[in-house]
Image (cartoon, rainbow, N blue to C red; front, side, top):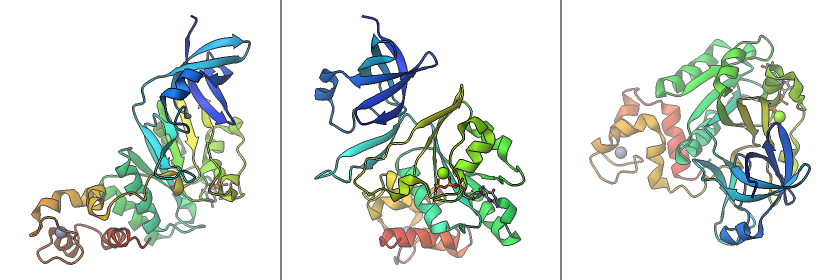
Length: 300
Ligand SMILES: Nc1nc2c(ncn2[C@@H]2O[C@H](COP(=O)(O)OP(=O)(O)OP(=O)(O)O)[C@@H](O)[C@H]2O)c(=O)[nH]1
Ligand SMILES: [Mg+2]
Ligand SMILES: [Zn+2]
């Protein structure tokens, strides 16, 4: 049989749009495949698939090739906990915040970072609207660089950081995420005007009820750039992280973890806690430690 390889760029209402040979093929799924896997987790954007043509522009997906990574969430409508894959095979997550309008909430940024660490996905941070920054805001950029995160200040107004952003996206499948209104679509439009994404309005994703399965397009603005623009934090598998696992998702805490007097140590109140001593010495930022405490107590 004539099977070809392709990339799933959109999933909508039982249709799977597969990009192959610069064409978009409207595909269904072979029934046999459905029986093999749990519904909802069959095929996601970012999946590489083998498909057979039926007629011009239409085909059937025969097989999903093994995934190297996933961004998933717990299906909200499922009884029990069913993992639903939102994006297959992402290489990295780009977390976009703006320095002002809306102001950067570091506790929320830390939730995104922890979600990426927990999902084992490399994360980088874009701090947009840097044209609106005041000197005190730049301390925040340094705080995250010191931990080891790649932090890229950008501005759609001055053009700062745009070429670096393009370089960051090249050769990869990137999940672009972050709060509404921070300028994600604006930045993509500046880099690739043909995308013509709507900006300046609250994305329609945010208006949907949580029972809607929200699956974004996989944008492919140039041959080697794939970007999935996902609406926000609820796409991440996050709520099932146990408090006791949290410390491992704060990279700057790792070197201290085996030095606490008690094992296990929650780093909340125990005497002789090496994490708290590192905070007192200024080696771990007080704000990051406060994020840890809030997440530990499920307060954020
Ligand atoms: N001053 C300034 N304004 C910006 C910048 N980037 C975007 N904006 C403005 O911020 C507003 C929101 O931009 P969008 O691109 O729609 O934001 P978004 O992140 O895509 O928002 P959602 O789609 O709702 O998630 C628009 O009015 C933009 O003009 C920037 O670098 N500086
Ligand atoms: Mg947008
Ligand atoms: Zn401790």
